[in-house]
Length: 136
Image (tube, rainbow, N blue to C red; front, side, top):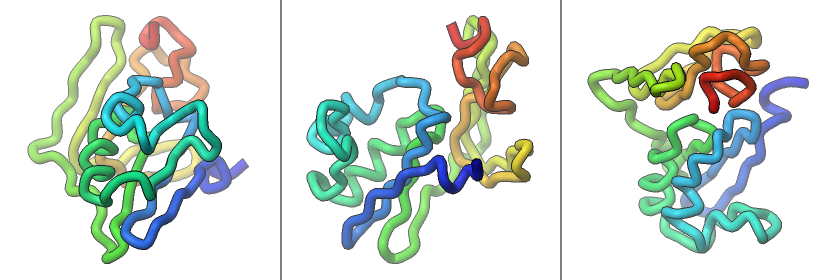
């Protein structure tokens, strides 16, 4: 299955939100930041019309895994953090923010946020999927 088919896209006139479920580590930054938009009890669970594009972008940038991304109608996307930062959790996960080029089995991906596996047991290498001890 291609990575493109694993993504869900939600569009409004002002913003497109993309969600890649396999990358979600349930930090809940989205749900806490904009509960009127990100509501797991609703279908679809992402309702981007319930907020402004600017507020959506602000909350999506809090998603540590990069499972949520956005593109503004005028073509604006997330500006990477500078300098790039890497933070290791107590269990070994690497949270990375900045202008990233991530090598995956599907090819190289440009990213601005990612949580990388630190134990080698993820089935979604190089991303963490909570399968091993670093995700505990």
